[in-house]
Amino acid sequence: MRAGYPSVCAVPLRLKEARLGCLNLFMSNPEPLSTADVALAQALADVASIAIVQDQATRDAVIREGRLQHALNSRIAIEQAKGMIAERMRVDMDGAFSRLRAFARNNNRGLTEVAESLVSGSTSIDEIVRPKG
Image 1 (cartoon, rainbow, N blue to C red):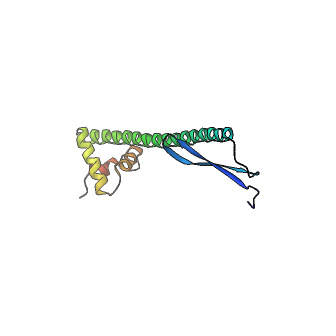
Image 2: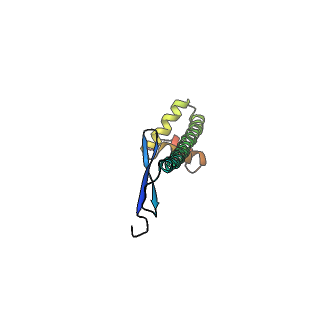
Image 3: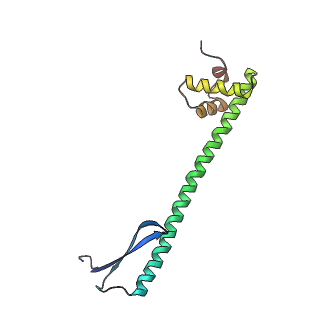
């Protein structure tokens, strides 16, 4: 009232069964909205609801795409590292993976981290193929 709005109408923001919030209409005249005005306000609220849901879906898709890309990049690095180890040690890919995994565990490092460091050259293949002793 102090701000000059003696009347307000709240219209639900919804999409099917989901309630997202409400659209508040602040009015300078203390009179009720007509049925046509309420229907128009609800139509505006419905469009806003669709925009909110679409925005969230887009954000979710970007997050999901980032996770999938990270998983793909990790898999590529692991496969490259396995190939390097298999060639050096003259073992099959399963044996190479076992050695890579053992090195990661024994050094308290993540598998992808070890694979990426091996492929980039920041970890020597000799560190991985030669057991500590």
